[in-house]
Length: 363
Image 1 (tube, rainbow, N blue to C red):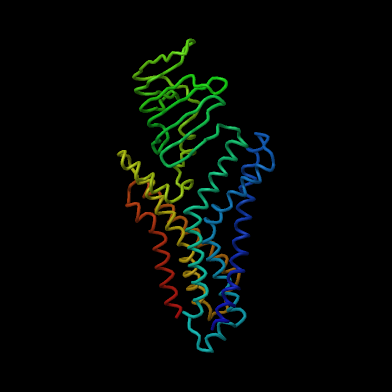
Image 2 (image 1 turned 90 degrees about the vertical axis):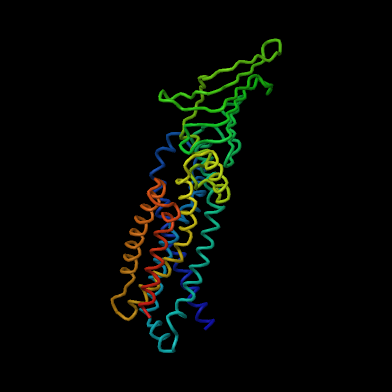
């Protein structure tokens, strides 16, 4: 039985690797030609473009791995059935549970790997990709430090901005500190305020601000303002990207810390909680799709109509239906229509139940 387990595990791993490679390659090629014109507008070096797409591979792999697992399972069972191997196994008294063991084991290992990716690897690679895109390709300001509750930005060679926290939409900054240096990096001006608000005129206003400057004699001149126009050359979109309020740029630990901070400040956290649990739930989908593929493959293993083309078609159709349900749940969770925990897990739980039912029927 160990030999049979290793044989099926190895064959399934090969088919999965091929499916995933094809899906990721197709996605990367389409994405490359979609972004190529924009990158060429900035006269970007080809090495920067290549590095950007390389760092996007973990996120793309995470997204497509469940579809590859479903496709590989259907193709593997179809191949075993075509070669009469499943019939031979059943003739030797091997049950469906024993046939399923290598597939389920691979799916469980894959889901664990995907969890590690979404928890740590993908946020790190996304930050690196964003740095290449914004700083090296688009030649925009470089962020110096990014944490869930603090952001340092270099606005120009002699200006630094530090923000303690940013509201989810990026239009309100809390505890803002601006530092202006003179040549030689001698501190020349400091401006601090409780909040910076992005107004309708696309201008920032600093509330409860204090401005301190050094005059020609080296004395500190201080002034206070209830509202001070703040000519900040950044938009809310910049802060949404930099501070990683898009949860894909945070590790799960950072995201949990940020959720606590936002909740403590009295802001709505449905968006963030939905994304937190959505990432965890999606990492289990590979196992669920493997179970569903096993059920469908074994259910049709007694028929001669099971073909490779049919398996690929089934995988694409099921993948599309899952993505629609998952996306709908995430949207409803973000808007607070349903509980974030339910919104994140609804598609994964639904397909796990369907896969388990189909597999039991195949027995």
